[in-house]
Image (spheres, rainbow, N blue to C red):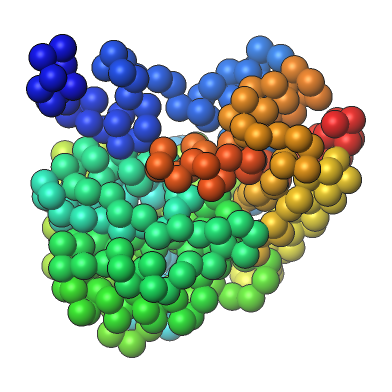
Length: 402
């Protein structure tokens, strides 16, 4: 509101910041919690378990393929849909792992990471007043992207420690105003996997209310318990589903920003119409490198998940020993821990103190929920375990001093 009591009209950048929970009362934009925590890690020399990036390089075959592409002159604009070598590899990947037959020329689009794929999808299909439903806590970009498109963000809570959605709450959230149901499984920040009953309900609701399904599956190969089921493989799902993934998490190449979308040709083409005015194209020499990664043998993917699961167990044990209550993740990079038993009533304040107290950085889960739901997660902290074993051992030892 302005001083006259009239509603204040927000500029587009302010609307985006407001959707991300970063708009101050004076109209300025606060830094993200992730930027704040990373800055604290740098200033204090603390171990940064706040930001989800690995501290080891990916497989040699993938790195060498990038070097070879640069040396071979693959350094100019690639085609708008992506280099054929990568689109073909993505199509093979979908067939190999999930039995999905995808046309690499019409049903695959290479993007600047999964986040651009999400942005282009939301901007392509969401108009002012349209509703987008997500599960919450959720990747912080979702709310900002919905706000930027002029949409309305509806959430379905996932509750610690089992992170299972209530199906009645999901039914209530999806209405005829819903344009997109955004499904993130394997889930960030909780590491949960949505069960088949929930996925089938999403498909049922999408048909009932004529909504699209957009999926975020970037942790698809980092599953420790069970197997990932893409919603596009369920009966009745393919024709209204855009599936998004990337190579960054699977191959420890988060800085390359090579992602992709697969889905029906008409939906993919609509996303391309937006994507070409965002980054246009990106990462030419990295595209054949990610293609090489997607064609690695099954053993690579199994070993990568097993190694990450072992690191999860190291960090979870350290958190348990320090007095946290942990929800053991089934996938991904992160473990969520409840600090209530340590006397914590405000996880955000606790995370700001933690680098000074013990030299470790985490992120409050309040950063992943709408402000109206922060009380429900006020004592929860997310820690990343996608780090070297010696780093996690040291972090666990430091946390024990709590």
